[in-house]
Figure (spheres, rainbow, N blue to C red):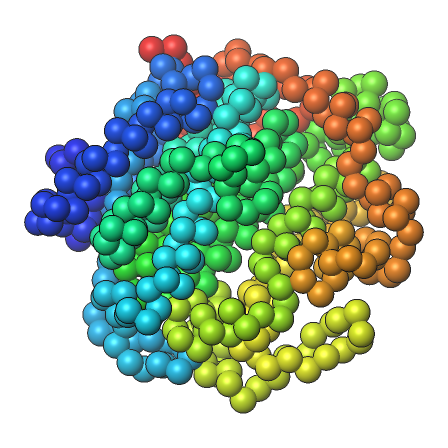
Amino acid sequence: MAIDYQSRIPNNVDLSTDRGLQRALEHWQPAFLDWWKELGPDHYQGHEVYLRTATSVDAKGWASFGHVKMPDYRWGIFLADKQQDRTIGFGDFKGKPVWQQVPSEYRSILRRLIVTQGDTEPASVEQQRLLALTAPSLYDMRNLFQVNVEEGRHLWAMVYLLHAYFGRDGREEAEDMLYRHSGDIDNPRILGTFNEPIDDWLSFFMFTYFTDRDGKYQLKSLAESGFDPLARTCKFMLTEEAHHMFVGETGISRIVKRTIEEMQKLGTDDPVTLRKAGVIDLPLLQRYINFWYSSALDLFGAEISSNAANYFANGLKGRPDEESFADHDASTTIEMLDTPNGAEEVPTRNAMNYITRSAYVRDCQVGFTRWNRSIAKAGFSFELSLPSERFNRRVGLWSGFDFGTDGKPASRDAIVASLPNDADRGYVKSLMVAVTEIGKCANWIAPPERGINNNSFDYEYIRAA
Ligand SMILES: [Fe+2]
Ligand SMILES: [Fe+2]
């Protein structure tokens, strides 16, 4: 179905045929805009930003690009096309037609899943609201804003589901989405990590590489849901999400590239010398990876989870790429899990968080292969790597234990030494100066190989209106 851009809220859900729903969402819209202006990107709301906007839900050619002031962005409700005769793909109801309405027995679980996912979307916008003030280039600033407006749209996607399918309590939950704020002591965002500000660009690239990728795997699992409107919503969100991970992966690649350049020029890998030259030494990068990766693993929840088993049994949340598994029932099989007491047999359904996380871990490897190849090619022996899944955990089987990045028991001191220290953070902070001249880039990061949408790096991605 084509997207209707004539109505106040762009959509492909035939909003104009449901006047009550349309009115309710039109009522929520100004509150969203107020929130965006107050807690969205600081300082640049009046600038024209080269942004992509969804114009169809086709995988090919779904977006158009143009300069737009962020408050004028056309946030809308876009669901992937309905699949004819779709059936539930896993669990106890496998083979039954998918639900177009919320089954009453799963109403509160589904609402919880949607609210928890939805809450992370505006949270990340709030966490990143000051980043533009230290953007390493206009290209990077534009990418930041693209991520921000799309997280705003993902909020719209979840709020639509709440309004359309959950009646009055759904409307209240939608209001609360704008009422909770990242870092607010009285009304924090639901998940702990989404309350920490992201105030340097290294952390932003780590967030888009590791945390957004967790989002990708949550969305992939929800895109399998037997509740069809949720599945279709998440499916389209994934199309947008790919760019967020591109920002993270290329951001880290460009840092590695710039650092290697300086290592070759100076003929050293000595962090002190490299910091004098204004680049990010690889051991510091590794410590940031250790921190962000271990906290992203926590977002998958406990490895052994009866909630996850229920979601799967009831067809609410599947595994990422469910069709790639041979057995979609998973009620008679076991999974071998690494636990502090040794290998343990766990019923597959109870190990769903672990299975989803394992797919995530494999996906996280992609960038490392590339980064390490370029370091080796330059003649240095340093290797960036993912720390052990046992390292620095706050959730699940390994929380409360002291394990090092190599997965072996370690002292507290050794663990602390593997994480960013005050000097690291202070140094990264000292690098954060805005570069707003067209075609120029900060010293600590290489310019990208190409620009956005076939434009060059020195395109005017942001301009004063
Ligand atoms: Fe998102
Ligand atoms: Fe994202």
